[in-house]
Length: 446
Image (cartoon, rainbow, N blue to C red; front, side, top):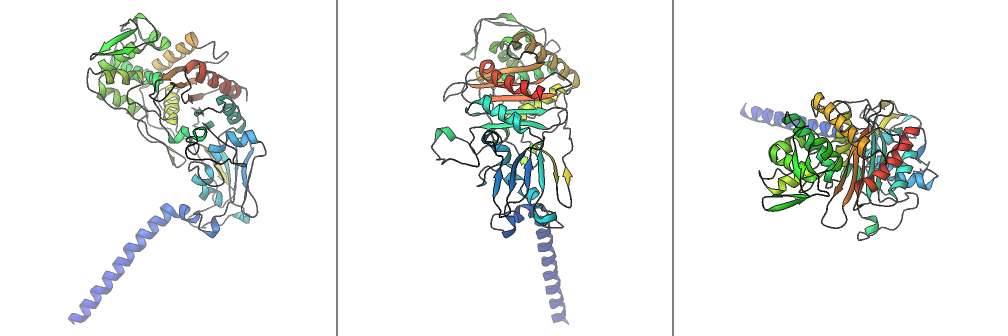
């Protein structure tokens, strides 16, 4: 009898273990099935499917024997490299890699089977021609251009430089500065010192904390001394308040604001803005930013309020924040895929709103401030455009400053949020502002 019990217990243990392992396998199959099915060692993972832009322009399609055919225009191919990817799969955020399961037509129920065997069709949200305009405006420099419809979340422009022609790829060595970071989409996978575009976050924190934020004044005499160190400015602005300080980008004003706010509180608002966390764009995880809450009264905290010190910002995180300001404090989540068709289970990416990053009253106040800045200080750079935004010239230790321009069009007919970043580009308005104007003028006319 004891022997029978032991055998019964042994069998039950084996059955239980089998159930546990089966449950784990099924969980991993549901979670990772698409990745397994599209792995390069899988005979069924050869290139299939097609990718089109929002206007039906073909970006890439598969040949019968598994090859890839890119757009016939070399400029279009270069500009859309980081959206599509390359033949070797070295751009992990490109759709050929990140959405290989969608292209193959993988589904948990049907596997990699697709109607007609040709895979699925992805229609991207990007405008291939606008990407070409942005890439041309970037002019071969390292940087990023991102434009998003802040009412729908559709990313219209997603350009990262440097780039290359995926149909005729060059030989790229690891130590070639011309192609430094070429396999990274700087909009999604990088974070950089923001410089003065971060003053928008400092202003937002002050508006929500201090009742007199718009009327309080500080004195700028070309610099201020904090903790025995000097925070310099580009001008001598005298007694100055928020509106003019934003327009002339007065460092002492925002340094003083940061000192009054304190490191922990300023970090809290940076996090609420969505700049410290990774975001997910159609399953692609973006690079988070950084803000170190320096000690009270320290020069590091003063510089943090200006967008220097250890601050880092991801371009997509910043464009999402700018879109939220334009929408009374609530962002729409960015997306790169309009819909996937051709299989048994076609899908479309719906608009998804995020959690409010600012109270609506603060967002409205900040929107007005940035619109006034655009009108009074940048109008000559953006003729005919209702630009609300902020320039940035971010000092770095290894060369010329990074050039930034971030903002949105305060225009219901063209609800566009944007970020332009030019690595070691120099002045924010002259360099990044010029690129932004070229792209936005084309966008509102398209």
